[in-house]
Amino acid sequence: MIDFRKARFVTSAPDLSACPKQELPAVLMVGRSNVGKSTLINALLDQKIAFSSKKAGKTKLLNYFEVDSSFYLVDSPGYGSTLYANISTINFAKMMEDYVKEPSLKAIVLLLDLRRDLGEDDKRFIKYLQQTKVKMLVVLTKFDQMNQSERHKAKVRANELGLYQYMESDLSAKTVAKIRLAISSVL
Image (tube, rainbow, N blue to C red; front, side, top):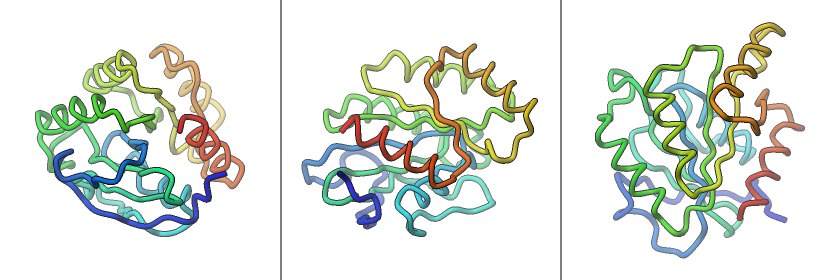
C-alpha cells in the first residue's frame, strides 16, 4: 500500500528533457488554471507541498513530487487562457503531446470545475485525452461549493462529454481516500 504522506518535491521542469531520470511511473494532474490541482495534490499528500493561490496561473512548469518512492505525481500548468496561465497554448499542447507518449506515464488525473460552461478548448482537450491510450481519472472539483441543482447539472455535463466514470471532489477524507485508491490501482 502506497503511503501518500511520504512525499517530497523533486524538481520543476519546463519539458520532459528536464524531468527526473529515475525510472518511476508517473501520474499527471491536468486541468484549467485555478481548477484546484495544487489544492488536490496537497490533500492527497496530506501536506502543503504544492503552491496553491487564489490567483490563477501560478504553475508554469511540470512539478514533480515523489510519493513513497513508488511514483511521481506531476503537477502541470493549467491550460486555457494564456492571460492567466502565462504559458502559450502551443507550448502547453506540445508538453501534453510529449507527455502522453512517455512510457512512464500511467494515468492522467483530469480536474474539471463543471460549475462553469466548458469552452471549445476544454472539449477538444478532453477529446484528445480520451483518444490517448493513457488511463484517465476524472475529478469534478469545487463540488462542495455547488448546490444540489448545480451538482446535477455538472453530472449531466460530464455524461455529455463521455466522462461516465468520475469522482466528485469535496476534499473530505473519504473522497481523498477514494482518489488515492484510484491512483494506486493504475500503478
